[in-house]
Length: 96
Image 1 (cartoon, rainbow, N blue to C red):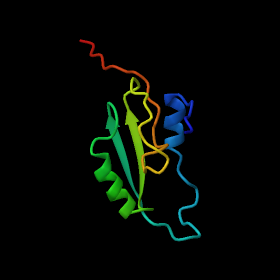
Image 2: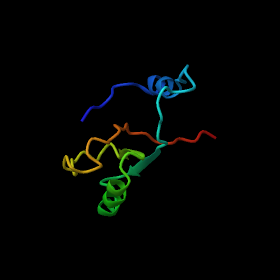
Image 3: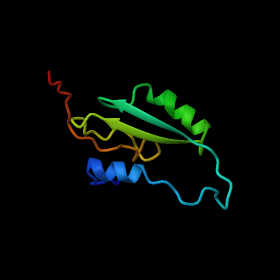
């Protein structure tokens, strides 16, 4: 599973890149991105597996678990395998 080592500024820069070519030389199929924000494994994973396997090529999957969750729960045949986005611990502080 490939992980990146970009900091937040680098990730923001990468995500904000806009292609210079507005028309592609080939037909693209629109995709939907699914982001699973979770403290552990994806809930209802068997149901999601059936949905994704019936609609291959129409989506991208990203799993963003808690940084404290470091189990590998998906085998290589799972649609969730290798889809983890690394996380850092954070907290919200409010200054009054």
